[in-house]
Length: 381
Image (cartoon, rainbow, N blue to C red; front, side):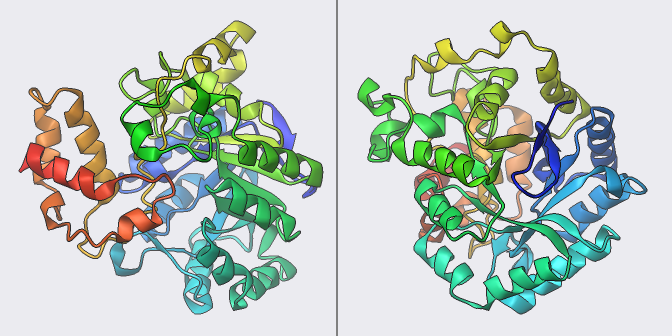
């Protein structure tokens, strides 16, 4: 494994990290298999943003006796009130979930304490203009977090956060598709494949500025959405003429200024080994240049199953429903029986959508959620 310094924190992270979101709602055996594989590969940074108690307990149990081998990237404000993934700036609620994280992991500190999901002006004000920021600073002062970070999908807002001088680490959505879509591109046209090459004329300037700003300030970046929720790997959903490989996606992220680690979401041992296998690839196998020179569309407007759209007032698991929809859309006349059965077993179905728009207002990737729910109803119900 190779390691890179996390900015000025004195810590170093493996260039391949583990995103543990795919361990949520899975049995303990899955968590044990994935975490054992990660440690065998000398992966030393785990992102744990999920607020649910069962997934945290499974990860902590699998890590038992090995806490000192891992940097935990935990998040302040990630909650599951009403049993749905959500975020809050209420300090009392944040404290409850953060103390619960410490208790479950049987630790006195979290290495990287991330101010959770700052994408909009409202998010920014809720963090930096309330007692929330005082709470985070006190956690650092008391040694309950070793370094302060933040997570964002919005390059302009992320740059603003960096410029406060508060954070030492940024978690940012980084892949070739997100980076290349020009800021003023029409999302509807992108989804319809109507964008011409002018919309992919190199890096979006806001993202270019952000990466360079972080590098100049010594602010490290850990990446999320490195594989585009797997969509960059498939010919059906890739915005390029052909899909990228896992190794090419990782290499793209690692060649961005300031990036220290790519946090790859894995649900099997094989996926961990494939990600870590990046270290054994040749320069030719890592090269992504030829692929990204031929864009055919954009991932903006496509769901990456991150669940930032929740909570849904109707209780719909939007990411899960959309994932089933994406599978069904590959061949609407031959939808896998397993996918239909999974949809039928869903506690809340797409037909329960009230079109309130709450999800679309919160989605960092401009997904047309309401339209997707209508499509799911037509295909599954």
